[in-house]
Length: 91
Image (cartoon, rainbow, N blue to C red; front, side, top):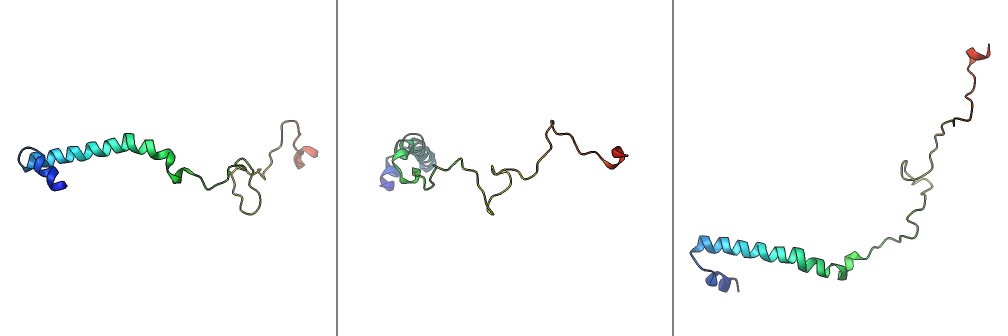
């Protein structure tokens, strides 16, 4: 089949090479922009294996990492609380 395409293309071999590369690029572009998006919804790799019901759950326990939505252990005093008096203020 490729021999047939090579014989059908006009001109000497440098122009046949340029035309064949152009045909290959055109075929790839057609597949990339039209064929693959059309069949993408029907492919099995679009089905996720992760259950998303508990996606917003807060992780707890020894596997929980800082910054992953788990409650912070360091508490800062709020503005309504007064700070404890230091030793120099109490004398």
